[in-house]
Image (tube, rainbow, N blue to C red; front, side):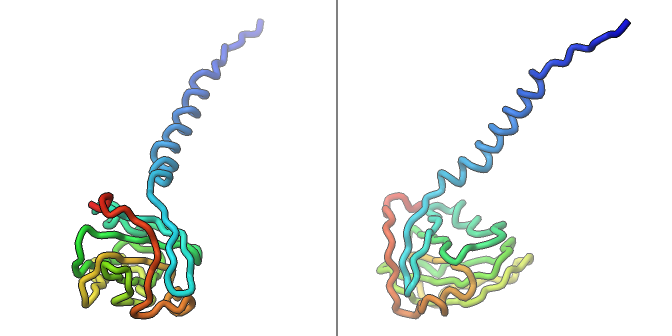
Length: 160
């Protein structure tokens, strides 16, 4: 006499649904909610993630494993200041461009290398309102220079 154990697919389906839901909540949704903007500077046009609050500015590009040539991070600060860029937990080299309140380039660091320590910190010599992080080599390849003007739109009321 054969005995058959009833196999219920219910728990497996529930587990799959929970995994998909977790993926949406923890991975896809946060990326969809991050503001993006078109950014023009030098000879380049970039798809820029926009960091408007302290948490997003602190995270920056930490953990990003690859930047395509048209990607950037645009950090907007509530006031002008000598804003530090910290390379801790960075995985890719970047060019860093500081802009004044008029979106004019005031300071550039080329080829800032990833650093797993707290030692690599870069700071503008002049107070800045915005900082752009680009793939390393972009400043030269897109003719970004001091006094270049960036073009992007940000609602100043959203900056925290």
